[in-house]
Image 1 (cartoon, rainbow, N blue to C red):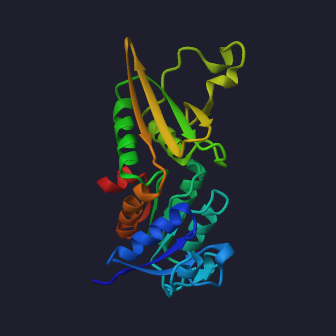
Image 2 (image 1 turned 90 degrees about the vertical axis):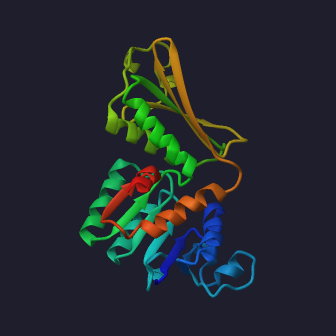
Image 3 (image 1 turned 45 degrees about the horizontal axis):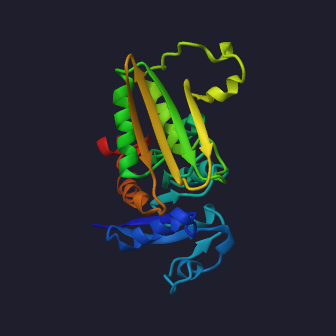
Length: 266
């Protein structure tokens, strides 16, 4: 069986470097190239402070796609859509882990993937346990009328809400809208304290030190509550298994699959 030729955008970053290690250990993957603007022109191993790997680092995704089957992107919201669309133009399947993209962005990526006749995968969180949060919340929303989301992250996180929280809110919108007993425009004092509305759900983003990314959805019914929460640890290890699974399955369908839990069921 031939291996999957892989390029990683953001390969020298916190998550990207962990995925590099996972890809190198996976017999079904050949790490072909990397994208990291500050390390462009170097060998990836050298850029990571290790022995040379024979993997070139490029400054742009367009330069890195020769002979590539799948592109993994862990860069930023300002670059991720551009990278995904560039990959799809070349018939390369993107696996998107960057935060900050919304439903309209993913609709554009899905359309481009279908036009190209290839698959794409995106997830706000590639942790297997985060996928269980999405699946459980979707089930709960079918039966419990009220919910809100709390999004916790480090103080310097550049986007709000997190990709996990945004994906969760948009997923719940596919089930139904939450019940609202008092519309926000009727709230006295400071209505903005009720959080932002993301796809119909109130989302509260907390940014203080000590968090990596934690996402909690609180459901409420008469005389009872259900909280489902995912907490990420201090390393990128939890994301590697999900990303490599997405790499292995990205070319098995046409169009975009959004959400690791849906990929698990595909």
